[in-house]
Length: 277
Image (cartoon, rainbow, N blue to C red; front, side, top):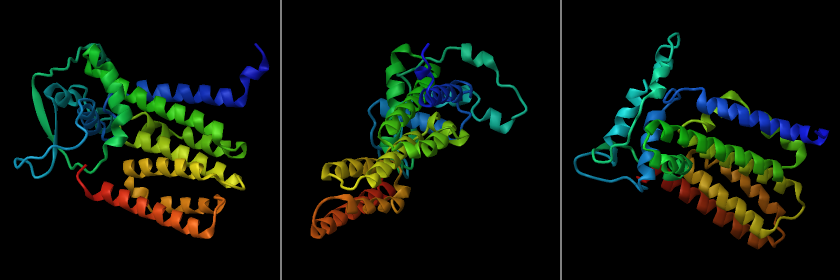
């Protein structure tokens, strides 16, 4: 086989793929932080529940999903490894059937402050595996979809990121904590993937002497999706205003663009942080 097939880039993505697979399948279900809650929320989204329901019975919003989903984390001994790390996880749990009973439903009281966008990859993984009618398969479908989105985002980043910054992205993407988060049933997985894309676009645009307006708009749209998913980073996002110096236009138009960007960043961050969505 020619040596060109053993380039550092190919080897890196091979290692990244293997590590992602290990973190997806080697860690038992619901042994990562907050996976039970996020799995239930992602399952509700896969059933079309984008926003919370509201009722006088609950002091906050709620979602409705099958009762079998509610009992599934306990059936898989949720947080067993964290509570008793010296113990052994029973492998017999992987050989049982966990059907989805759509006839019996239960409500999940929810604070409704976590935007639905972070759960989209997870809900797609669940949706694709629903015909199999096995909650264990759906759980790993959610994890696998989150890992795949991260892998594809890193692949895209390496195409647009200047080569001298590759090592920063490469080293960061294989950190154990990053690998755990992007392979977990958690809304953080999409936020991390979007963050990598924003970093790559930002460094690419800084290298350019002139920036087209449509390139800035593309960056801004991705930034708004990121902020809607993870509104706590709205102050850091103001760094993007540096890119206005790369836009070939008058200073008046630059100030107008800066005003629009700031208003959009503040508005969507405030909306995500304060409203029940």
